[in-house]
Image (tube, rainbow, N blue to C red; front, side, top):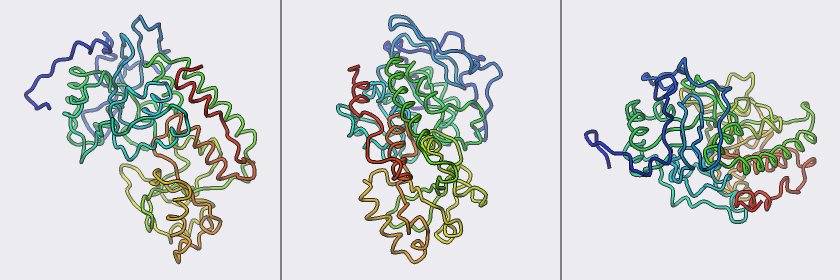
Length: 393
């Protein structure tokens, strides 16, 4: 454990990864402001057009993710302090899941899809949960990871006890930060570049020098998307959906999301062309500044074609139908909803969706929304994906 008066020296193995010799813009964190209410990119931050450099394993290589400074790696990091599950899913996809040492909150990391990939798994019990009534600086010292795979702006703007000086200390004494919040695009402090799921995935592939694995998985993804886009119904025949959060089995109030918003956790819905039921209704989505809920009466005024309910990642489809949908069907107001009458109430998928999540979610929701077009066939070869992850390709 560390206290404010203790100096921690960087272990010798910390030479595995280190910050680039030239600090971009002369700043630790381009885009991290001392004021938590917002942040702006440094004027001299590395251009997003600068290509990521990759070399052989025996040579140093650099990776840049805006708004952070360039990071130079002497070799592939062996231990990673990760925050969001979407980035850990990328590590698993690249065959480096064992390097993950932590996750923000274990219950938000949906891992059931790994059960369908032979030889692919991650043991949640081996991951340190960063969150426990907040996040302490000391836990980063306990983990002592080679790399902090996370956007420090999220820590600075989410936790009152994490300061800019703490990020600088952790970077200097333990290891660099590299990451960008990609799961949503609703934070007013995120004034710098966003990355799509596969743009971020490509960056992480460079960190782990796994270009071949990345390209192989991307090829499968692109084939699935091409097939969906060729077969999905026309715009006038695509349903709208109300995307909501409520983890209770007997829900009465819901946190609304805007399906029209961008972010990695909605990319699969956009591929399928599902429209936002809340468009034009005046209902805003859940954000850091808006924590309002809506009830069944409000939902009935909107009367969406379908409902996507998040907070049930631990449930199978059958369990969800027997609990949540069953409750709605017997509710005096909920049972009037078109989505409930037509049994178009689905689990909404994880908030943090990496590339492996994305493959399974594309398949699940294509079949859910368009059962007559997309039958029970598998959209991609599970064994092929497992072989890529396990290096047998």
